[in-house]
Amino acid sequence: MATDAPTAFFSYSREDLDFALRLAKDLKKAGANVWMDKLDIRPGQPWQRKIDEALSTCSRVLVILSPSSVDSDNVMAEVTFALDEKKEVIPVLFRECRVPLRLRLLQYVDFRRDYSQGFGELLATAAIEQTRQAASVLGEGRSTVPTSGDRAGVLRLRELRALAVHTGRIVGMALSADGRLAVSASWDHTLIVWDPATGRELRTLAGHTSAVLGVALSADGRLVISASGHALKVWDPATGRELRTLSGHTDLVNGVALTADGRLAVSASWDRTLKVWDPADGHELRTLSGHTDLVNGVALTADGRLAVSASKDKTLKVWDPATGRELRTLAGHTSSVTSVAMGKDGRLAVSGSWDKMLKVWKVASGRELRSLAGHTGTVWGVASSGHERLAVSASDDKTLKVWELWELSGGRELATFEASAPLYCCTVCPDSKTILAGDDDGVIHVLRLE
Image (cartoon, rainbow, N blue to C red; front, side):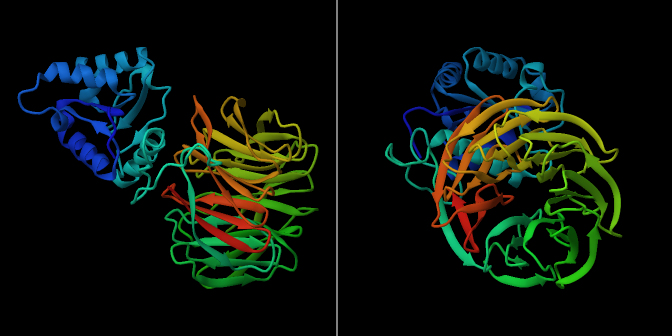
């Protein structure tokens, strides 16, 4: 897309020129309106004047961080100017380095290990800004910007397919780390293993005798754990075989979370407790007690270092699963907390509630960062993208909403999808563009953010 003024200025060290050129060209090719001296200063133009003009007119600065750039007087001067002028600064971590103090409070985009993943995150960020001015650049294609009469903010959700896979309400969904395998849990007593790319049903996991209320999947897609009745079951999704049953709760088990390696599980129950399990042998490791009412859900960091629980007592609690110690309580909702989600590293948590609100929390301190208002019914399901830039919510008001999720700013509603039935769960695929939502009629909606 083209606009009268560029929106993003490239600040980089000459030692990082090859990477900077590749990134700038890829962003331009995808439609992002970025400015880089090597690409945008024509022969014969005054070099320093053009740099100064671009830096002044751009609304944001992409600063490429590396040992050479943090030692560059020019790069640090550009960053200082941008921050002083209240421009948005996005750190792009190219190589391990000592990040300047003023940038440590800003969420960065990580290119150190995986260029494709980093580019996807950066492009998604660029898309949010671009839609304010012309059109979205999120994804492979382009779409027109919603007009002021559109219900949602700056992006839109397009339904790719609707899969009628269950015969009852879908209340849980889980994805493998690569997004190639999904498992859904339903009131029809079953779980369905399916392929998100094609919508093809791979197999049914049958064995529960009552509604399945929660499901979790290991990162490699080799282990499923589900919650139903007073127990949990462990499954091999490749064969559909039930491996074992985990018993110990004295009331309904309403949710379950699993570490990335599948070696630790935490369950949430209406008996007001959480339990920590070893899925390999079904052994109960410990019980987490502290809530004063039903525990409705639980989220777990990928490494199992932290767990956050959601309860009808209107609070969330942060736990150390290794010791069973309660670390802190997150209070702020005015009614039952129905659901909770965390990013990969557990910095932020997002909760949904009967009070129709979402809340964003700083896990380390327990501080409420903001409330997200927009739903007209109970928020039953929440999810966040792996990089913690977006939050997604599912409500019985028949809508799914996507929110801008930043630690120090954000909170805007970006897009809304309206279904024909109440929605009870949602999840975000690794590409941060594909979203899955389950409804009251047993239908899975596969949505694309664009």
